[in-house]
Picture 1 (cartoon, rainbow, N blue to C red):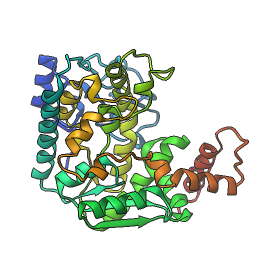
Picture 2 (tube, rainbow, N blue to C red):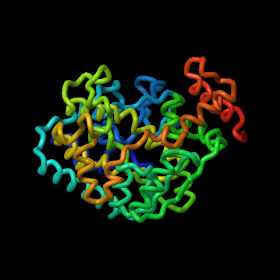
Picture 3 (cartoon, rainbow, N blue to C red):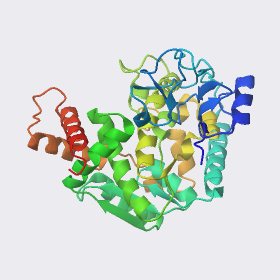
Length: 377
């Protein structure tokens, strides 16, 4: 079977999007080759890499996975350029729009309708789907609207396992707990590093829980893993979008949220490649074009303030979830699962002390080197 040259959309959709300068043609992201051009959607939801080692004048070398290339470089999001040409600038094909915000109820109705449309599209696909569930509002709303089985991953005393249990109880849902032990991290680190092409500590810490829950979901016979990715970036989930401090350039909450959206093209390939490495298809309903368009029209007061983040999103979620789940804060997955803590402990036990610069990254690189040297290790 021939490997498709375009993922996430059909060629006609992409051609029309180029002709109409439409960044959101109704897909969940796309990338690949169309009519001799490489394309990647404006949020970079589908990974696409070009080979920096390919010789000028030869056949263009690109791939959907970094492992297929000698020197993989991410093709810029929002770009469309000849496959044999130089690397284009980000958003040179499509730009992230900046529409006027809707007011109050109109913004909430548009957001709810978009989320319903995106989750309906997922349910209409003929796939067996499970949900990576942390007990937070993002994954809880995905779980409720997809009515799919729930899986949580973490060490036995972790925040995420306890939060997922209480949320599942409140929702009247069964929950599968994937309990971790340190050996799971040692085994999985080289697989994650190889699949993503990354060894830095933060990326590996974030990806490990996805990989380990995905392994279990795949072993249980599912085809796809649904995640709540994108909610924090889209709906104002970060403290810095309220503080407007040195970490952002914007002077408004909406402007700061747009800055966070532009971080997705670098983050999402890590998550997509990690899930795909388990044999599953990643499903992220909140990153569907319809939801992104609705999120871009949320006003400041439905994004975040000093008292509450993701305000509009939580109001929509409260129509489907118990209040205790819809209003719940969460920890980042690497901390909530205790993966970051345990990976740090393993690094120190292996002699990579905290006084060393970036000691966990060095430990990750050592595990990858050991596995490459001895594949049976």
